[in-house]
Length: 329
Image (tube, rainbow, N blue to C red; front, side, top):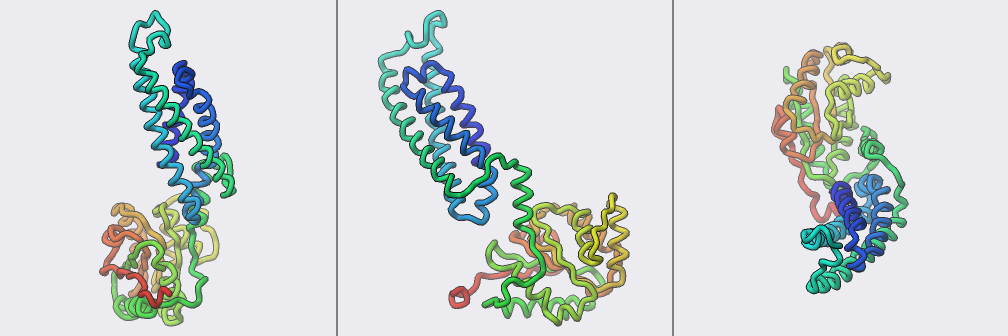
């Protein structure tokens, strides 16, 4: 939102800078300073949007920037409307010669508003230096950094987990008892809003000695935003064999997955899934069915969206609730 809006406002600002009325209104110096501030801010915007995921301070800074940008957008709209009124007269005379006495009042108000918003952007630009934001980070680089940050693995980084014993036991019971004799591939979504500890809980289940003894293979794949069948299948192969398959076609990857999973009772965790596209899920599930796994093979899915769960589930989703106040403390 901030990036697209700021780009539009920056273009509108350049139009005002070029308008000779800017000098008459006394805002030409303000517009030049604003251009300088906006240029500096836009250079670090992609990095800021990436860092807001982990930094509340950066998130607050971006909100200040967005609020100020809306105010500046309104000011520039008023300038544009006033300019059209003045320029709509006799084209043979200078637009300054056509300025009406009433425009003096506009000149007074727009000058004050432009001065205030320039100071506001000055403060925002000064605050930018506190966050060590990098210049020139492209959207692709920011996206790649975001993907790297969101990657998860099955190792337990929080050995002590409070208030989730009952949740863990219910999920383990499903794996060891409810899904044990199922001929079909069981899919059990764990649903909860961000920050509730879905991934931490599933790590506890994944590393539980009863679960490890029950399954022939345990596989962890972090999916995140990019629900790509070939990528997920490649991750399954790499997790099972310890080697990057480096296969070019989806058919070759499917055959390798079949070789790895055939006749195995496996537990596959698909962590942080956001895909609501039923066709994408059907494609992946179809490839996994072709592997002809043993009875009891199960997929655990973690997601923040109930819509994702309804797309993927073969069993009702497990809805993770908030911790009690005592457990939170």
